[in-house]
Image (tube, rainbow, N blue to C red; front, side, top):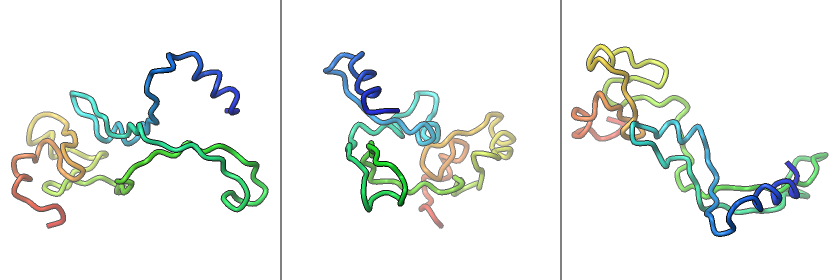
Length: 122
């Protein structure tokens, strides 16, 4: 998208409305029945990327970079109690009759009671 196209798109909205960057993957990981604000970053910087900041032969471009103090996301989320992952929660379905969801970065809804007393990584 060209800068002029972005400006034109933004001008279609009320100038007082807040702008945020949305990371769909992070938002999906944090979602439960009530929704999630994970992956919504209202703080971001806008900067021109040029010269030594970009690979040789690449044209300059504008970067919208969100401010996030917690960029570490494990490659595969795994429950610290039962070991289920986003791709396999069969044991949670057997245990509760429903698929689980994440209540903490490493704790699923099926194990929330058991996980209260456990320290992550134990």
